Length: 119
Ligand SMILES: [Zn+2]
Image 1 (cartoon, rainbow, N blue to C red):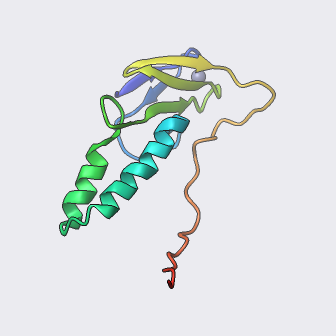
Image 2 (cartoon, rainbow, N blue to C red):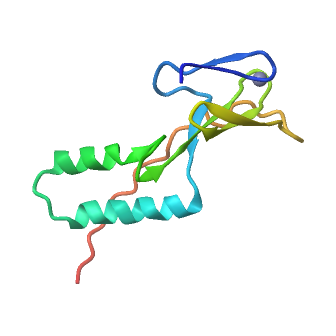
């Protein structure tokens, strides 16, 4: 997807990475499947970590993937939220009771270090 027209007339461009008004949503079922898939990769015992990482990445995303994400945009002009119905088709939600127009412009917190269990 390279351009999406918002109902307000603004054109949302999607032609690079780390777009401040773009995100992804995942269903609750897919969310837990994601953890199961990560466990499966970790527990596979494959000696090739790079292949495992690429397999993981290739199976998660938009479109026909094992773990499916949907694209989500928030128009920075009017604040509408656009959620993907099918690739290239969106439904629109108008904000109610707030003026936030940058809900997707955030970064993750600090890494929580893994602490190995002593058994
Ligand atoms: Zn808009």
